[in-house]
Length: 328
Image 1 (cartoon, one colour):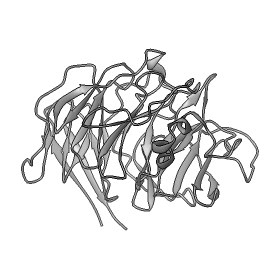
Image 2: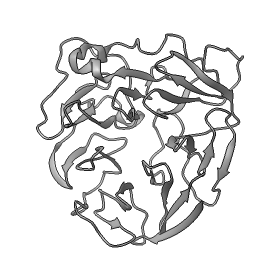
Image 3: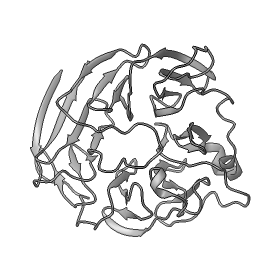
């Protein structure tokens, strides 16, 4: 099944876009779009510049609006300001604001960010701000970015980079981090030497498998390592590649879309993670040219929202938001 519908904007493309039930919300501008009228807990009012990013907690209760390449962020509770969220001032224009949410084992929701240092992850209770991973010790020399929690809240992926510069992901065991916070300062979940090429993007397929895509380039093929131009699916449980294939060109930002991947480089493309084959493309929808986690000159990318049910995504433009439904 495939369909496209267009919802008119206010005449200007929204800066952020997240799903809110069957509707869409821009938590920065305060505008919402719904097929059958508004529902509760919608954005209440606009937030001023420079906010141009948003993240929403699994329940939808909490939101963070932030400046992608800046220092400013606000944590919201049902759209109402709760407290400021900070990051350090060490070259923020070089990497996306590191922030995400998780559900704790007791059902509460928590915020994950780097409030004091770009290389030190912290987990705090969303409603109270209580730090759950307070610890001593030096921060990792890493630029955390593009944080993503696995669907079952077991793992945290950071698709950031190290100087000078090399994009390489790190994965953390969130269950362990809550009992041993110092585990957030080590990088031993993924095997050493797993990545030969710069990481372009990554996303979770489920609570065990994570898809990694390396930037295009030249280099030999190695069965154990992700080489330039490779798309690989890594199993956390098995500790090995489930699949690894070469792909042509950039894939850009990746999202889980049912059992497939949604690639956003240039325009949306539906990709089979096991073969790298492009199953469907929407070349009339512009989705920007963001590739790896290193920033600089990547502002003003079109807002895109992928529904967690894996059948819908939305792309924002000045006059319309296009909602694409696709299932197979």
